[in-house]
Length: 207
Image 1 (cartoon, rainbow, N blue to C red):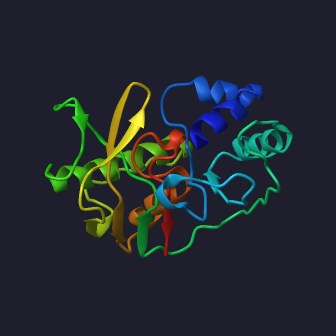
Image 2: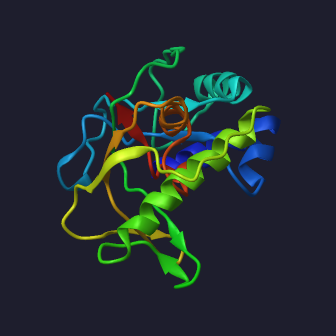
Image 3: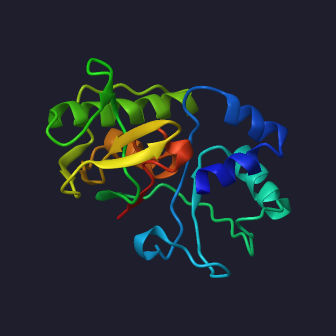
């Protein structure tokens, strides 16, 4: 529901519409509704919060205005608060929404039982790609950004998407202390972990 709502919002602004229709990294992410509802059933006329993050100031400004103007049958925007965060030291990343990674060799998504080292490599490479998309100072590393990577769900999570399913998992990541790892952890907070961030996948919190 949320991703469809944001799609409708983005179609009301030329910049957002162009970004929405463009293929590739989108560099924004959003949480689910909070407080989370039991069995995913949300009450009519109840108040919920949602967080949207991005490194693109034009995106944030356009979304802030478009959200304040949108008239929608499903969701009413009551208030909007803008917060600018500076990079801080991060010891842990916790994904709130499932994280998606494609395995091209299998023509499928990474799931429990697949190679955990491959997951770690893809996680780091995905964040490198996002960072190098937004920065003129390119980064490279052959190492991963974490001391420890844990999957917090017992079974792979299936997410309906278009006419098929996405396969994802929730992660808890103990982040290394070096500069590159800290920079990429900040990218994860702003743009999400993994793929399909524009539909809410990979949103995370940092500690």
